[in-house]
Length: 263
Image (cartoon, rainbow, N blue to C red):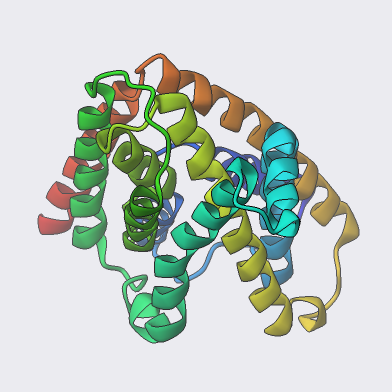
């Protein structure tokens, strides 16, 4: 893998981890366009490194929130910090169950299902469109809403459904304050990213051939820096009700994908 490829993959990972355009959907479209069943140059170890970079960028942006979560986990008191920590855990349950019980079925969805991708991008666009028009409130995340948002995250496993788009939109449609919705959405995915990294490592990420340190370093740096920018930008867009642009993008790309696949 050359440094340009590593740089581009890192930038793509940093952007699509936070912007509501569905990285998995775009990956499937890319495979169809280039007639390939794999992403050129993308190894299991490189995937782990890029996920580590975006997870780190999230931790940096939300370092105060993360400190409160850890504080709540180890206080063993019924206070605001411990309740927020429990809500994060509750939100992880649906995706964890789906990932463990239906791993093979999920894999089959990432096998050239382009019509599915186009339709799911349309659903992502609709969610973003509706969320942008939701009324401003000061409502916080409850245990019930954390579970519902978690179900949205589980559904976002489908290629074409944006994880950040689905979780933020669901939160806003439930009446949760937009700033809190964005923060909860990004924080709830960190444990899942770390879990996916652990699974990839157990699957042999560090025993899959020669380690290309320069490429890994460039990819990590690109994903980390881009992730910092994309995460901060996304929070600002949600607060300012600017998700319509991404909604239009998802509608257009989804429609073009469906039309091309049917022709």
